[in-house]
Image 1: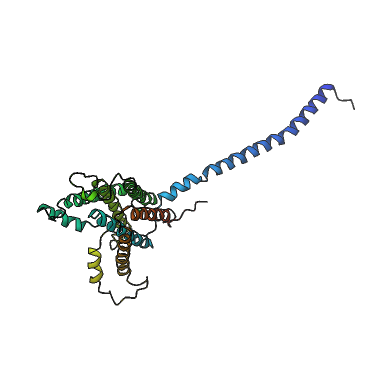
Image 2 (image 1 turned 60 degrees about the vertical axis):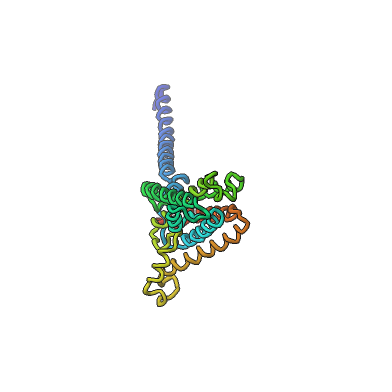
Length: 298
């Protein structure tokens, strides 16, 4: 057999090299395909920020939120008692304010003929708050976690603002007696009236009409109109509306009593600081409250 020529050897070498390279190229393509698939899977997995956004966009579950509203009733008792004891006005219970506005038409009470100005300011800011926040809440989804947290944050900011005004002396402790020469007291009254409106708007959207958190007249009426007032067991599985009304009354009375002790010296700042901190804690609870279709933030 004749020996292979140089060209034949080169051809054989080239074929061998080509044969050796082909599997390598195939492996590279396979790894590239795996990398692309892995990258696609990573892109599909939601980031922590995305999960947080979904968490905040969730509607909160209404179960047991009545407990939070009872706590807010306690806060209302503290705030209203402090404001009335110091500035002779309400910021949450507008029935009393309406009576003072009516008395003001005849120039009464004679000891405080301008009390109607304070009460009128509180009513106006409360109504404005209900009007504005109810519409904003509907646009933002009223039961979304982000909406409820924002509602609480606005209340905290306004309450803290009043605390700072009083603490720094910008609003004197006797500001309520300086009208009409000095009307600075109308500023904190308007802020507190507005934040009280946000509280009752939230309770309405949560569906607990028996827990308005800022008023008790209708609560007293509905409680004692209940045909099962004394017949249904007190356990949670019994007459829930009756239980909620009763607890809200107790909570508001306890809050008012505590505020009375704190404002004996005419200083309104202490109960306001306390209510601000309580509202912060309530906001933290809302952040982790179970939602409808729970999303884990891992």
